[in-house]
Length: 313
Image (cartoon, rainbow, N blue to C red):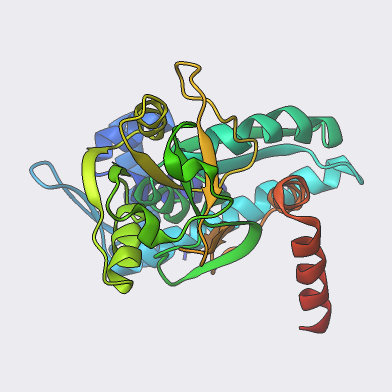
């Protein structure tokens, strides 16, 4: 077997993120012919076909190629970590690629981007905000180190760590009759106009919660932006049901007030979690970032419980 270079592994590790060779070459800042030659040389060294390249059908990795790309990505990551750790001593240094689910990104990312660098000035946070599908694909493709998402309907093959607890809460106009209550039963809301936040997996979870009680919401509007849900609620057009979030300002984008009330009994109790592929290890920088996120957003009693659980388990 001839020698395989780290550059060849780096190039091939990136291929699962692209459907054509030309798109991969453009992203990698290499000519398409040079990338094709690198893949051919790699296949010759391995002794197996790693991908199928057809102009009409684009780029497809073989099963061997998929596994080879995964292992190549880990080798490239480990090599980078080795170089970084050799030069940093006790100080963390280098990038961490963080993904965040779009609906709560504005509630958690500002704190992380402002405060974390004060503790670890040698670490640069690169962020991606997106849907579950986008973040999971980026994790699988090696474009993210870790992502913050709701611990709901996640696929297998992931490691995860709790960051903070969350549950569904009602958003109401301040003059809504139900706004005077300290907590609301889901049945109290069933006959009221509902401003539905239409997003996966939240929509299904809310409808299932109503159905479990033999109820069905009266949907007055269905929108895909949390800001629009809050704006409509603040104008008295209905109530909203959204997951609780840290740093929540009880105002709509128009500056109109909103009140939030917990549900009793609680509904859709969950966590925001940090996730990463089970077959990879967190870099020290990504691990430190999760430590900081849990410290910043997790309830004190929740953090103590997790520490005890880790100690015992």
